Image (cartoon, rainbow, N blue to C red; front, side):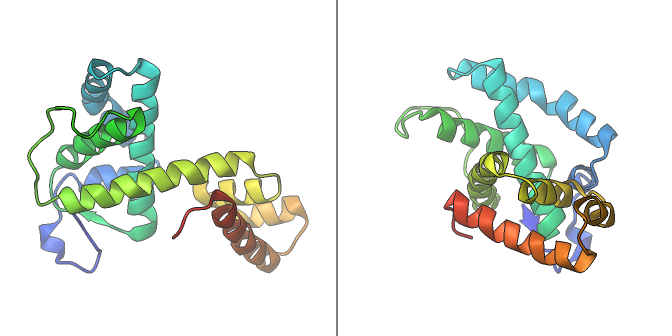
Length: 187
């Protein structure tokens, strides 16, 4: 389960380090996530009609969703990372692959984390749509948004684009609005 940052800090699970590592682009943590969980995700997806590429895409989409929630919503993990990540990957694959809802697939029983999993799942879909729309955008909006998402230096970008830092902030807001409108998602 993930709680807003205002919740009781003593409830934070030790696996919060995974979310913290994602939000700070910590290579060691990201590598550990791949080494601990990629085989299970790949196995599940390949057993249910997918390919290695499908598994890699699904894994990445769920990591991206968790990254966005951790970085921009400052959410905290209060249960193991595995108990959130694996079901998210499974549900995302079921959703992507179009497996009928009446098909029997072994998923863990409903847990208290189910509501959070559904929320992250919805945000995963929205993230995928936004990233696809971003790929199709033209510069400078594409470059401005990519720099902001990657934590790049905004001052250097302003100099490169030959605009003031204040105008860059306004342009970034305009570009984000354009991205959201073009994608057709509701936020």
